[in-house]
Amino acid sequence: MRNISIIIPTYKEKENIFKLTSKILSLYPKTIIFVIDDTKNSNLKNRFRSNRIKYFSRKNKKGRGSAVLYGFKKSLQYKSSNIFIEMDADFSHNPIELKKKIEFFIKNDLDLLISSRYLEKSKIINWPIQRLVFSKLSNMFAQLLLNVGVTDYTNGFRIYSRRSVELIVKRCGKIGDGFIVLSEILLTIKLNKFKIRELPTIFVNRRRGESSVNFKLIIQSLIGILKLYFIKINNSP
Image (tube, rainbow, N blue to C red; front, side):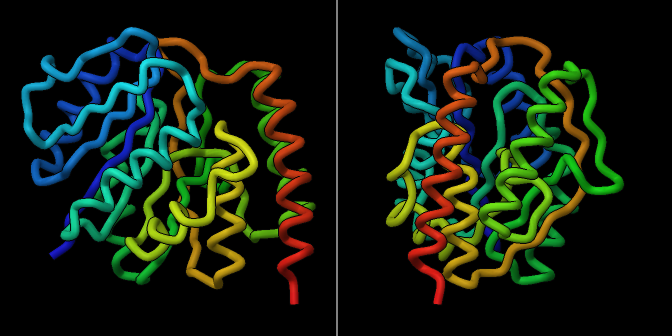
C-alpha cells in the first residue's frame, strides 16, 4: 500500500491554497497534505475543512527550500508515508498530472522523479521571455557545474521515496534556504547513487498570488550553485 504525503510551501497564496488542496483531495482522497505557510500574520488552520490537511504557519518568509525541508520533517513523522510529493501552491503544477507520474515512479522504483519543463513534450505557458531565458541559462549553468544528468534543476514539482526524504532532511539546507535547495537536493541524491528520472510537464505561469522570485534570490541561487560545485568536487572519488 502506497501512502502519499504532499508538501506545499505557500507565501501570500490564500486565494489558491484552498482551491488547490480541495482539488488534490478530490482526486486523491487518502493523501495527507502539509501546507507550510510563510505569510506574515497568517493563520488559516481553522479554515481547512479536512483533517487530512496539516497546516503550519511560520509567521515570516524564510525561503521556499526551507519550507519544503520543514514539511519533509513533519511528514516523516507519519510512518506509513512512503511517497512524498513537492509542488507549488499557485496551480503552476497541475495535480491532474500526479496519477501517471506516481504510477511511473512506483513502476521504476525511483527515489526522485522530476517534472521537467525542458523535455521535448513539455510546455511552458504564459512565462515572460526574460524569465524563460534566465531559467534556461541557470539550468545550463547548473548542468555544466553539477552534471546531475537532468534537464530541469529548478522546478519544484517532484516525487520522492522515503529513503531520499530521510537523506534530504539530514544533509540539505546548509547553503541556503531558497530555490537553491532544489539543486542541493538533486546533487545530494546523485552523490548517494539514488535513482533519478524525469517526465515532461505542462508548466503554467502563476495565476494569482505573489511571485517568490526576485533579483536577490537569483544572485543567491547562482552563488549557491558555485558552492554546490565545490561540494561535488570534494565528494568525488
